[in-house]
Image (cartoon, rainbow, N blue to C red; front, top):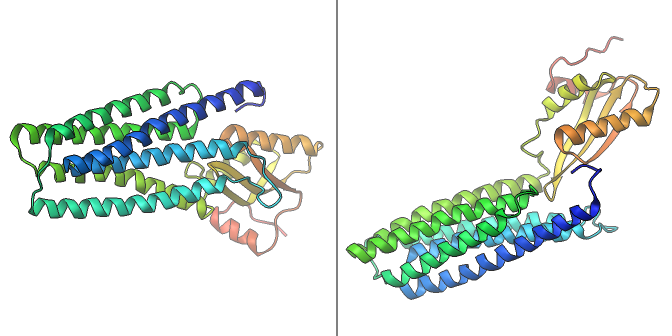
Length: 314
């Protein structure tokens, strides 16, 4: 986001995002309930697995909504980052819950494979097709908003994409059952759909855990950032004590920069901030500028990490 933008248009885009996310959430969550009920009526496990998938999606949409909502709330005295971490914790809990659901579905599928259960193919078919249409609708709602590349909205759209596959799986199972009466196709496809859920649950778990453990965002390579910074800004001699972490998907950074004593201290500071924002989309960085070479054990440590960057001549 450039500072030259009209703040109102940005707010409007944000509201549009929130509205789209709300709509898509309503559609997905509503259909998740219908599919869960449908799986009980028709006795289909594949429908239940797809409902599980819809649960991941509605959760993803809900976190996206919460993130938009919390990003608007002003940070307070004790919560200087606002409440954005809550969405991360919620995502983490959601991922663990999903892993449990998957274990249950696979367990049930194995049991049904040995003792096949009757499945009402026609009922299953109707609900699976309706689920597919609901997914297409949610995907369309989200994709109308692709002019503003909001990470949350994009992630949610990807989720819904995976969901389409889940519904297609349930439809295939229904067709096979209606034409051949071979019910084991239902647990087989429920396991396949569970693999889809596993994929999204696993990435959710990894990303939320990385954020909770103050890990650096995967897109930022700290060693490369140091090299790049020295190359791009001739005044910069050395970069050390670099910490990058995420709060609510926004990267934050602190770093020490050893520089040639500048004529214009604030100007150089501005340049550094601009560099971080342009190259790495880091809008919030705390920079400590130093004129003396870094001394002390941490510097040796930093040198060991980044190879022979500078040998201090005493």
